[in-house]
Image 1 (tube, rainbow, N blue to C red):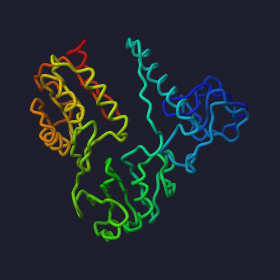
Image 2: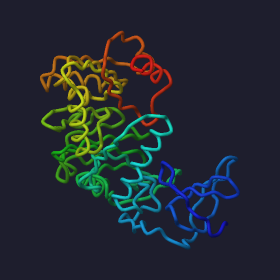
Image 3: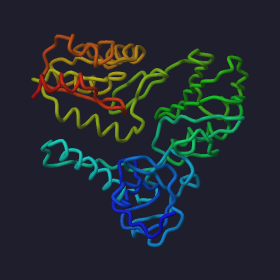
Image 4: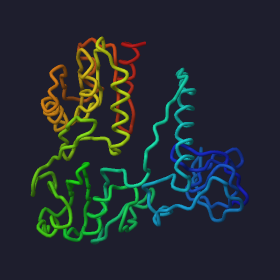
Length: 352
């Protein structure tokens, strides 16, 4: 136990950063300027991870989390900040990354959400011994929940009636569109299912159930309309989780494309950004690794009457140098792991 430790800043995961004898300590649920007593849980050569045992001095920016599971669940990290302060935190993190990597950006525009609750159109839940919830942070220990405050209200209807799925153990992914139509994706080691579908349909607008990658009811996709564009989205295809911010993102793409643009859209998903760009660009080339997403992309081009876009199926890092296409505008929406070295080199060689 260490007493009267000053929290100096936050890391990218929202953990407090302190130093003890020159060693970095990451402290969960601690804010800058707070003074705390801590207990070390993980001790490594270059850093340690700790929890707060007692708050000696609280930050004036601390607020009481509205989520009853916040201190247990591993889903959210900044609910002890009010929303505007969390936006400032994210802004400064992006700014610091630009400075660190010597990227000269004069203005960084922040697009805030109109509502920081009930915005997510997708969540992934665990079911263990017939109980549903999220894993506790950095563990496989279940935190049972009856509601997720940042999830769409229709998703929470599923959580309330999840027992109709009759799943003992597994994973449940819930996806929803702006019409509150629900697509359920279930993964379980038990290939036998006994889902009470008719009762479920009385509770939610059910468009499909995919059980261990097999459609057992309805469809394995749904449609979403954003900015007057219609998109088909398969159960395993990526789509932005925040519809409001997605709409703003579409506008940003459109505002930065002109009739002289030839666009390369990497990690294109179901083709959303590429299709938005195509309404102004001369031509768009899109690359995506998920087969269903590429199929969706071609379908979405037809749905939106777009004929100046071409989709390539493959791993960006492995095929980007083989495309042999000329472009002057690049759209990149990479996975969480970020860009690989091959793609970074390709971008530098082509645009720098």
